[in-house]
Amino acid sequence: MQTFINQAGVRLTYEMTGEGDPVVFIHPPAMGRASFRHLLNDPGALKVIAMDGRGHGGSSTGTGEFTMETWCHDLVQLLDHLAVERIVVCGYSSGGMTALTFALMYPERCKGLVLLGGFPDVNSVLLREEFRLGLLVTAGEHMRLLAEVLAKAHTKDPDLYQEIKETALSANVELVHQLYLEQKGTNLIEKLPFIDAPIWLVYGKRDKYVHSYLADFYFHATQARIHPIMIDKVGHQIPTKKSEALRMILERVQQQVKQFHNDVL
Image (cartoon, rainbow, N blue to C red):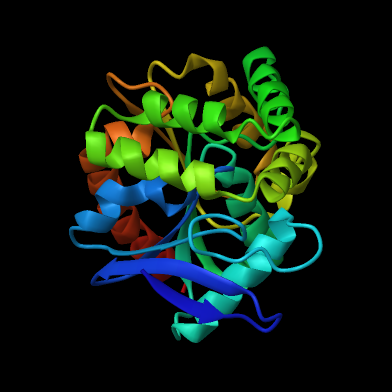
């Protein structure tokens, strides 16, 4: 784990492993960089960067509200700190909304987007219910329940189970609640036409309640090249349950990104 202090004096923790072109990972509420532990431990031919959002993991809370825009400001400052110019951004679950926000705010820094079980808004019945429960749990400060649910859903590995659980338990409940609330009320569909970076939509075949979002991306992200990928024998928890398949996909993404930009040039 490494740390840096941003311009607002917020301490942000991150891990960076591997060599090559960087992929930066964005986690969903409460989970922190533990979401990507397998990839951090075995990056393959990738440079993997995962930062804890404010109030998650070892990152401090700062002052004011924690929004996706704040997260993107923090992330671009980390990239400047690391002298990294352009990246592939990989957002997991609702972290995909933050990844989309980054591509809209900093298009010159984004070479491509990879969304793992991603969606531009919360409009399916199951997603709305998940966010409703997340808001109820965090409003009541029942983080122990959320920590158990997240850890159990993502892994049977005892070490990773414990890391996910401890990360969620240590998260700042107010900031987690803010993030759930903002993402639940955000609709990025009307902004998809402004994204011109290529987008890889990676879904588990069993994750059927988000498959419908493919149509939204195809219909609205008219400037982007859309690449759908389905992974067998997994639902939503791709980073923890299908990390090897994901690593191979990301290595291929980096090759395709290079080809895409060569074609543009």
